[in-house]
Length: 218
Image (cartoon, rainbow, N blue to C red; front, top):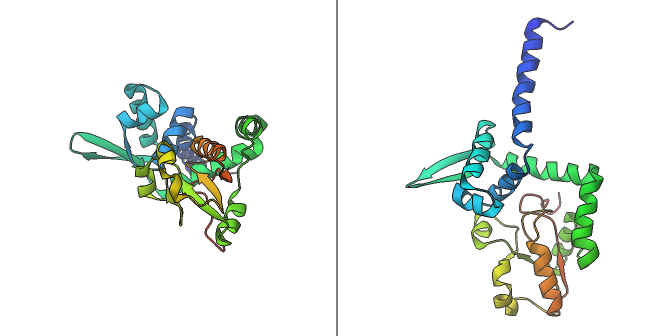
């Protein structure tokens, strides 16, 4: 039988763990984490991107701060929020992967949104890595440029979705173009691939992110 001190230790440890689970139990907070995994942001910028009020967004950020998943830094009149560490981004990637593997409704949703109407099945990380190593594809990062500058996949070209048509002359016609953005639920890569196909390019999307592609040889 466990001693009272052992029981107290377990109860307290799992209470701390539950704090993280509680912080992750909001769709808005998960989206905030995905955005902060790309680059630091202010509450005003986050509010605009998740289509919520500044007050609601601030409340979500405080919940994430209490769970020590995000941190803040004041810069003059503005407060910038960022992830507390790379392991938080890794946690988000694993959470997305587990949900996609085990929740049939999520798999069906992504298939119906991306694959069936648009024919834009995602190139997975292993296939993309093999084709990159063989020099068969050009990888384009279609996130906003500030996110690219914060971190990007090796060899990727920064061509934000909003600037795609202005950079067509940078793309070869004799190789496949693969677009990536923030991860499996980001729609920028699908939109970029669709536009490029309409213009005659052999274009594909990948649902990888800067945090999810394994290193070559891994």
